[in-house]
Image (tube, rainbow, N blue to C red; front, side, top):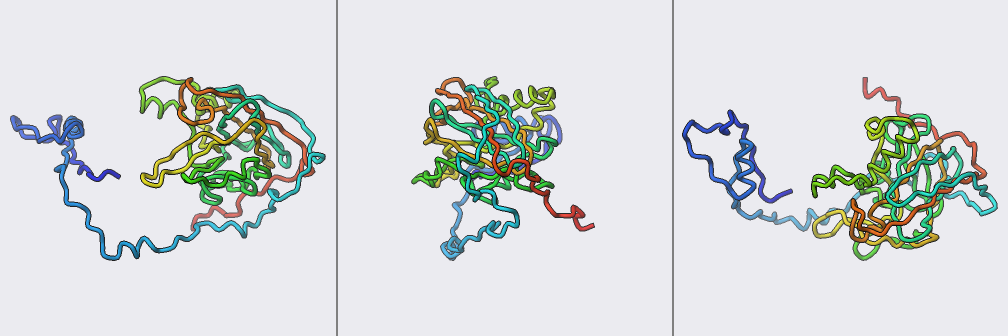
Length: 326
């Protein structure tokens, strides 16, 4: 929040509510000029400093409480299923080109693996129920349940009202990374995805290979939907291999060079029939740049395997009766 907050006063006419011939109100720099153009009045620029209460330290010292403890989740924990190479039979693979996206299908009980094959590269993952695009990955609830980043043992949850596990992480070669000195970690569910709208907002450019656009084109190509209709199904992602966090001083979202190297991978067991789409981010390893063609980018490999669980029944939808108190 800005230290100075504007009180917005509704303009009564195109003159901002001034009497005919009256002088305009004083402006406080560029913001004041913009506010006046829109019929708004800015407050005085100077305000008394905020006074810290006497019990400020005591208020800050209140210990946190985990919002959603997950140790009692009533669902079978496939994330702890031991899988050996002999248990896996490869069924398909898709190579995702740099700055593009590709789709893939995974049946309930199958495993899909995302691998770095040539160089450090981040991927943006969308997941849908293969039979109903309105059921899709819910990064916000996944974050609330498991934390800002996911690894072995965590699940990817679907949106309300379904709220069931779509996939579970069963192996992660970057699980060793943990949380670094900056608060960064890998495989985040806090970033949304790079998109051309934010790019346009910040730079005015027209860039068409942001992950949002890549995923839109891929879903449209897979389903036959128009770009407009497909775009409505694109959602906040799992940022595979991306190393991110929040700055401690300003609380801003940051990215840093991904620790992923060729041969690193992350494995998921599908818990419902899935349609997936993965974009090889134009930011490459996201060490400095995204939403442009400046970064060095590499392909990502998606492989789908049969497992001893292939053909299992999908995870049940959430048990809430949806009566909402009526």
